[in-house]
Length: 84
Image 1 (cartoon, rainbow, N blue to C red):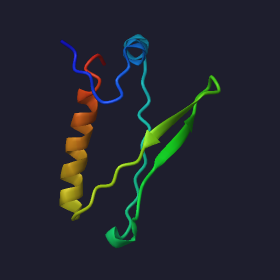
Image 2: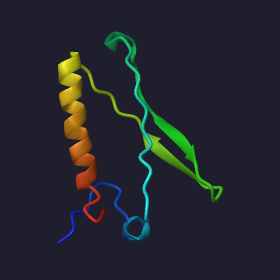
Image 3: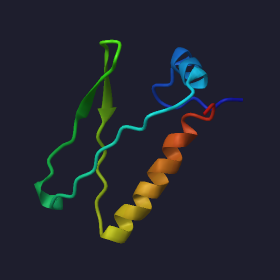
Image 4: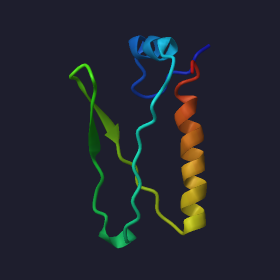
């Protein structure tokens, strides 16, 4: 049985299975914790003229805490796409 994460679309899942290569789009920046008010989405332009959006995430804590949270987030992210 396949796990379906938030926003999972069967059509999108079929597209992932058909892809030979994948691209992971991400960004990182460290800022003082008390200066960040919100994080939105970042646009990604596709070759076919469409636009996708990448949600931004906030991780706070010490360097070690942020690294641990990031590792867990990466593992969880790939759990959304068991077909790859």
